[in-house]
Length: 557
Image (cartoon, rainbow, N blue to C red; front, side, top):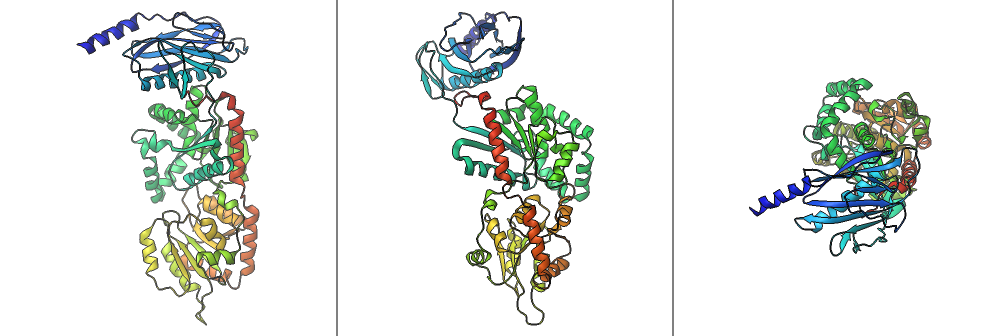
């Protein structure tokens, strides 16, 4: 019975709340504030610090003009505020005051913080500039304002701005390259700026969309294992009419959750490292009027062949890894001012000077006087790794003396079964079988060439280390262009047959050493070891340029 009376009392209060009249001559914007309990608010913003413009009725004052505050019958508060006057005149900075005149159901800390978070969101969306101070005035006592105790009727309490800048990286685990680039950018921010930046990596599809959309990574893994299906998907969605229609239809179901996933991180700059992370997030920012407040950037992680979904005309900056990709961006409609060619972001450890091969080989337990080939199967140890390793074991043994012509390092990644099978083989040359390695910059620095699939990250890292590349596999679609990128630039060769691969390596280590040295020199010329640093510095500049439009940490939207 008490609960029933309480609910009736709340409904009566809501019915009796009459919004103030909305003035003419201002651009009105809206946002909603949901509360667990019911409250009457007075929100006012004055154009001078400490200037008292209190009001006894619910309303919003912005630059001396009053706007409406409505309390709906569904326990939500709707505030309409102003961004600027119709004539475009600047309405200045504000002191914003939130006054709680009456509470039904008592005041609790959780509700207080929820009110504060939403209150700041309203200020950020409805004022052209941030308030110089924020004062919270409950009916009695003090109120903890995001860590700052504020007393009643205090109009000079400054809320310290967040000392951190926030970077949100959008990716999806469809292959390992996207996460690798995201981790490289995050590591470089930490290396260059310490704790000045908070960098969050988010898989929007997996973590912030409902079924079946959250199955994108699984669906991708299934499709790439069935080449015909993946080719149909990749090429069938290339036309703009097709993929834009798909994104528009998908956005109907996932836009709300994706928006929550983005906005909860309060980003100063957003970085997309995935082709499916442009259209829907940009549409959300545009709909909410945040495109001018939050820079949206794209870091393309394909060296040559790019799906058209990588390119969006509303992106602030598009970072391209090569001139070939930059040309594709121009053809897709991006302006030259939006495009920057810095290279592919790889782990910052690859930019550091390496020690000599002899020193690295001693440390890694390798033979110092033997040429070394690095065989990789990616993080999951996929591809014809075992067949190629066995062929190399035979080809790198001198048929006359029986002495080894070189040594073999096999990186099996997380594929423990493959590692166990290879460890059981009786090798006639020095061989090391490794699992998942985090110091690939050292293993690459200790070797003379590399055999790998056409993953763009591995190719970029190999070029930084001056390693000639033999590509033995690629994913149809996005990795097709990486093969001519390597071959046409004289950095390596393409071959799928394990025996032919082994023969090529044996020749490089014996009769064709000049060819190997020339390819190594070409790789160094094509390498961009500072790419991730240049990208991060540009992102930091964008975050600082928009610094005046970011909200204090104490008040979150």
